[in-house]
Length: 73
Image (tube, rainbow, N blue to C red):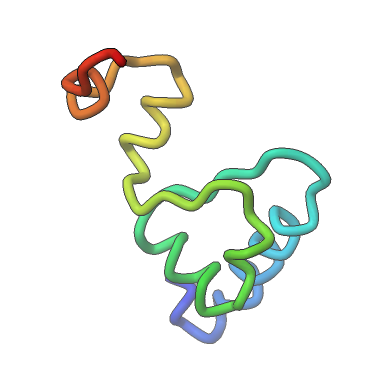
């Protein structure tokens, strides 16, 4: 709910903290991506995905159907 002014500062603080990390960073989920983009921080994040749930499953090592359907080279 970063679009609510009273909560925007918290979202901004977390987004800036993630963007300031010296390491691999991930933002997942459409609302999180929108917040980071509106704050102009998306270029300071290693990986940005609108698929929050799918991104978490991928990081957990689960097989995603769309990825599994890609033929091996």
